[in-house]
Amino acid sequence: MYESFYKLRGKPFRLTPDPSMLFPSKGHKRAMSYLLYGFDQGEGFVMITGAVGTGKTLLIQKLLEEIKQRNIAVASIASANLDGEDILPAIASQLDLAYEGRSKEALLQDLKQHLIALSARHSHALLVVDEAQTLTPAALEMLRILSNMEQRGRALLQIFLVGQGELRRIMVDNHMEQLRQRITASFKLEPMEAAESRAYIEHRLHAVGWNNDPALAPGVFAGVHRASRGIPRKINLIMDRLLLYGYLEEVHKLDEAALKTVLDEIRDEMPDVPQTLEPAATPTAQIQAKERAAATAQRESEMAALELKRNEILLQLMRAEVRFKEMLQASSPPAPAGSDAVTADPPLLHSGRKG
Image 1: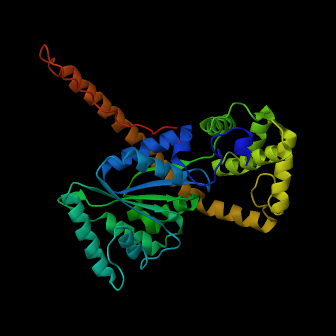
Image 2: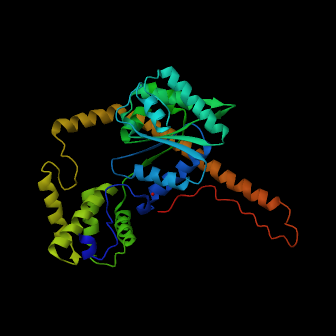
Image 3: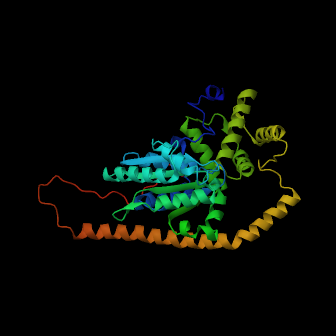
């Protein structure tokens, strides 16, 4: 519809994740670095959390695109309240293993033998669990058991946990101590600030050939950021509707008045949702939210401190490895005269195009 009207090559603000459209925000670049570092460790858990719509699934898709040239077997599941009895069949299904009528013990043995066979072929096995905050404690414990599988001191399976903020609160629970100790890298995706929100919108538009048609008034960028709170999926929703409005009204400049009309239409369609697109909190809900926040503040503070310390250690290791490679290069003898061989060390970490 509006694509041809504005001479765009495609829809710039799709709600479904598209790795080719990933915007390199500061948060996403840092998250990608930690993901790649955690992946290179080849063991334990890597955890990515963030609010709905912050781009967690897109980030994982981009990671898999980054490592697709490596010899890797990936199993990916979206956990819809899976419990300890469901998680093994779900994983077995993704690995093309028979699971119907198999006991838990038999499935564990099947999975271990399959992972051993992959390891013998020098293949890395990775399990990605999306919406991990919905897993039951029994399912999380089963994942911990799977992460303990090893052969000759090498882990057979690495696990990426992707979920909303509730996942972090689950991890600080005392009953999750053993699992928490096996987290090798973690990162929390935050909403974008105003400047990045504008850059994100322009990035998406330029990706489909935008040539300032429609022209966007400066107030539009600020208004979209306020209404979306910097969450990419909400930005996509608002901008898609704004472009549709421009097409229907046959205008080539969109201003604050047009944005207000679009936001009013969205509120009319969802009368309980205010301009920020967040559900209005009732007094009771506000009190309950404050009580929950107070009850978990200390544990979240502990988790944040541990994560900060772990990330500092990771950065130190990254810098140490770079220095070590530089020392090796400096101390290596010069290449024989006339040699055409050139050796270059790959970068320690790379953060994917775009976040």
